[in-house]
Amino acid sequence: NAGVTQTPKFRILKIGQSMTLQCTQDMNHNYMYWYRQDPGMGLKLIYYSVGAGITDKGEVPNGYNVSRSTTEDFPLRLELAAPSQTSVYFCASSYDTDRIYEQYFGPGTRLTVT
Amino acid sequence: GQQLNQSPQSMFIQEGEDVSMNCTSSSIFNTWLWYKQDPGEGPVLLIALYKAGELTSNGRLTAQFGITRKDSFLNISASIPSDVGIYFCAGVNTGNQFYFGTGTSLTVIP
Image 1 (tube, one colour):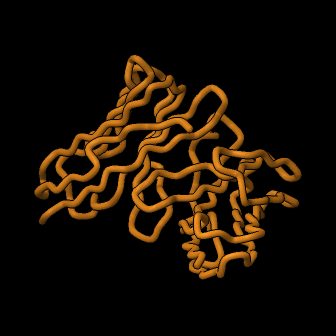
Image 2: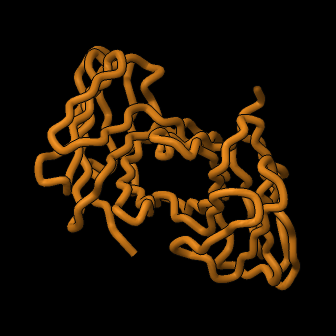
């Protein structure tokens, strides 16, 4: 199993550009999550999904959109990039059982908006 | 949003020493989690705690779910160089929302 994979690893965007961060998991997890991690801070939840076709906002959803058309994929879209979105983005997935809290994280995407 | 206070912010210790860190909150959580993050990697789950008062071990790591449900502790015994990294706590509330601490950076000096 590859686990949770994320692409790209690094990206530099100009203000106002858009991009999609890709996330794929091969563990057949129903639950998937997007977090951002700012320097010296803990992770903050952006969006999450409890299954294909179902998404919900987390703590910091503004400026982002998500979709979940398959169990495996959970892309995160930035429509109009702003410097405040410079961060490291982590995708995670978990079981929808009593192990729901045991999240498996991808390696992250480091995004800089200038 | 919910704030978890994690302390200390950083630690520099000699190899072989024991390490203690803690996480406190103003709110109650139903689950406490401890993660380790290596540079350039995503967090990896170390220990999950599901009941107030619970004490759980994973090798040299021991974590406790505080009785008040507002705090948790992580101890590492006999530290080794590969323990270097950033340790994060996370609390999960009744609404299944996750809140992460700001991390404890651990440096182990051989």
